Length: 133
Image 1 (spheres, rainbow, N blue to C red):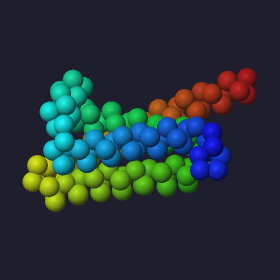
Image 2: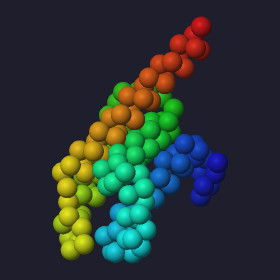
Image 3: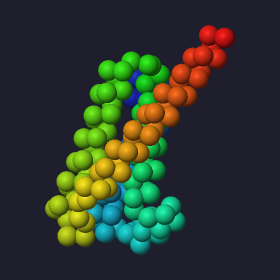
Image 4: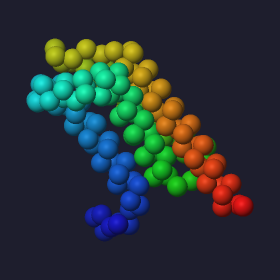
């Protein structure tokens, strides 16, 4: 896939689209745009914490898939970057009356990312074993 004259792997595009989607949801909720719809989605998936887990899991997993490598340093950089993104999202909520930062939301985000990284490692190891057999 070519974007702005640069060859880009499809996994990177998916990762960026999911990141933008999550950012858009957070901004919309902060600015009270279609809040009712977002709350309906939260209820549908089981609540705010479930939504945090699912979105962090999906973002973490697509982050790993888009790397196409088994370099632990790259995993560490991506993990720390995603922690920073979710932490920043929670801190920005201090500036909006309609929102309130939550340490529990941040911890659920981190747990979702850890679960996705573990699942990715398991799937990666299984695929490596099948290649070698």
